[in-house]
Length: 214
Image (cartoon, rainbow, N blue to C red; front, side, top):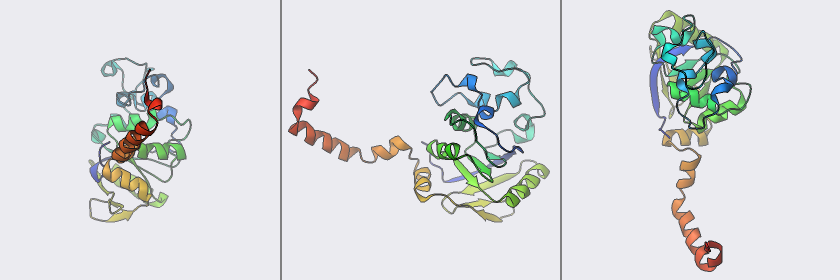
């Protein structure tokens, strides 16, 4: 998993509350478990004017020009600004996969659905909870300044505005440690690889029949 230390980039404003996981990545795209390739179908029903299906050539599909991700000023955005209860609905892990595959590593909102919130950290993404008043200010700034960027300093737990003003945010220390060091569940386990190999070698000598393949 890629380390998350300091992220800077363009902010895309998704001015909608209660965005559920089926809106983030519709159910017909859940057949794959590769964790990649979902970005082109992120917010599929909002981005395109036709009904999307797996394997389609998305470059030939008609775009909804009124949807924020189709606006040229937000192309290449890696920070998503949105409203309360983001990621509600079913617990599909494909939702953070799609967001990450599109290019978002940071999501800023007043609140998140619990399971989605946890899945973000497991996939190297940082969900940041800020007061609604601050969220409102950020929406105004993003919409009034083309190419509006924020800097996220995870170590200092700060959202840094272009004028240097900062907003602090809370994050669990263990999750922070994992993001800063690029550790997912497998990475955490592999930190104890020597202990695991030592235990297996010891048990193999004490109970060889357990390891007998015949």
